[in-house]
Image 1 (tube, helix red, strand yellow):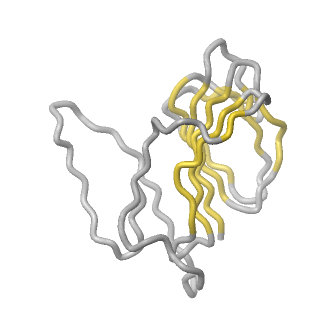
Image 2 (cartoon, rainbow, N blue to C red):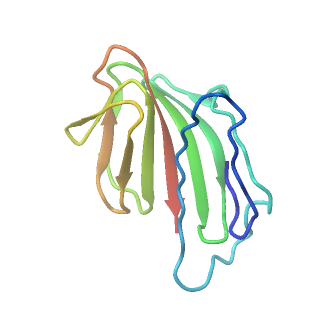
Image 3 (cartoon, one colour):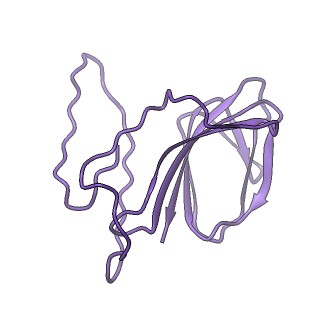
Length: 146
């Protein structure tokens, strides 16, 4: 769920078991972005959406949320299913990237990262991903464009 800056919000757990969630908060120094913002309402996306780009390169990508916010030129969120043996070479982006692993295990920059982990790459920091396991790895990618 995306809540725009200044948008009233709250969370409640209607179930009998504990709920776990991860929250990203960001602030910008100086003047907020001049571009149009995402609508002044919360935006929800389903993690069960069908892949929107499926390739022969060993991974499926589903864009879940994309658009400018008050402080970012673009907030981009996508889900990746990385099949066994697949991956991509290290590269650097001009924006910060956070990855939340949901299932399976990935390797990034020589380190194994298990499900239910968070990895953060600052803008300009090289990063790559590989699935060395026997089952698909599923993770969310959050891109925070200035």
